[in-house]
Length: 377
Image (cartoon, rainbow, N blue to C red; front, side):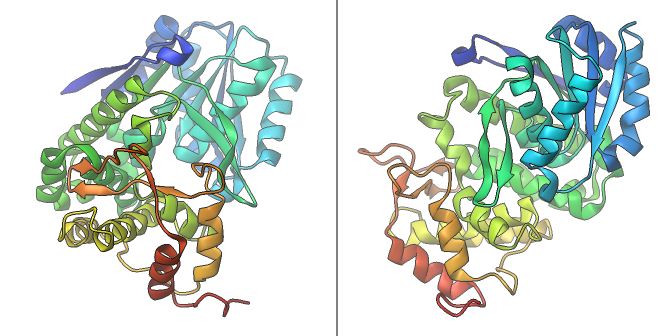
């Protein structure tokens, strides 16, 4: 089983393929020669992935006959920052990389974002190839061209759109991940089904146990399903001016919870909670079909994802982070709300996202967190 999906990247006049195939990591030399030829390659990975797959990837790319250098940075969301961007960029300069070079982003979502941002800004931009090794990155973050780093004010607030030359996803790598890490990626897969494809959501629900176990053919099917959904959206709206906003379902409150936990709450877990809370918001406003929150809660619980906010997150902190969300316009936070499972509600005036009264959001967060607004130290 294999799949090749194409993203039509109109704004940057760059179309790129997404290859989903078991064993594709060992074909990387042929892929880069066809889609990202360069004088030399920089493989950027975090320290953990670098130890697991760095030497192997360098050896495979070495078959191109071009120089290959491995650069690593400390693992963890807390290291997706401007300091590591600076260190990696300086490393490229000190190694003598030029504009005829390309970056290979080898790793999960943190690496894809950080290495992509390095490539986007190095000498005003050099090609990047996304090679996701986590399920989160395979189903979501490696596709779409978003790159960036986190700041004290929130996630991904400094970055750029820099589409890759290709994405090479090897579902076989998912089998080596801890079970909890697979669950993180499956949260994003549930989001794709929730916003645009009820049938795909049903597949995830029916195969939850085998997917969580990492059954290779089903993982490949899930990656392909998510990639097809996201590629279609990104092809129609690369710069998030319209339809692409639907991909933010669960992320406005999810990112706020993630940031207010000082990133102790992992991304997939935060998105899981964000989807549940935003579905509840939609139901309370009469926008979302009743029972949608319960269905999503059950689906996410089947993947051993959290369905209630953990202790220690303050409601006022989460609300403040939601207001600094990069999707806000004119200081107003906007939410993507579902019509029902498998479809987003489109507002006739504001389109795919809409303003939700602050008092509704504050009340929801107050009920769901263990520290009420005004009580946090």
